[in-house]
Image (cartoon, rainbow, N blue to C red; front, side, top):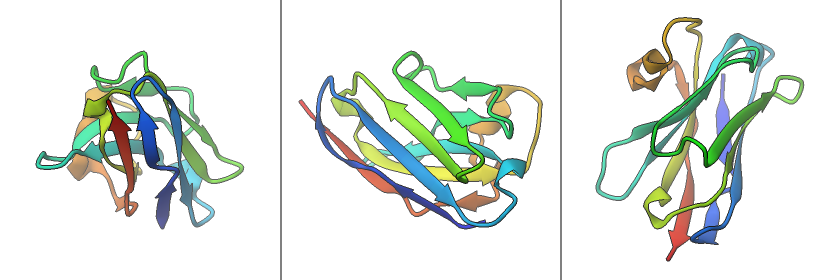
Length: 127
C-alpha cells in the first residue's frame, strides 16, 4: 500500500483545514487508517485512527472534539477534518495504515503497529 497525504497549508488560529490521504491498491478497506503528527523539535505523536469499516474511531485527547477522521473506501481515501485549529497544531501530518483489527483504541496510538506510512503534509497555524 502506498499512501500520499495532501491538503496541508497555512491557516489562522480558529480556522479549519481538511487533510486527505490517498491509498493505492485494492486492499484499502483491509486497513485501519491513522493520522500522526510531528511538531518541530518534538517526537511524532498519534492524532486519530479509524477502523476498516469506518464504524470506530479513536482520538488523542488533544484533538478530541475538534478533529474528525473519516474514510471513503470507494475512493481509497481517508480524511482528517481539523476545526478550531490552534498554533500548537502546527506539525507535519502523516497518514498510516495498519492491518490490525479490533482491540483497544490505545493500541492504534502505537506507531510500531502500523505497516505503511505516507510522506507527510505540513500544517502551519498562525496566531
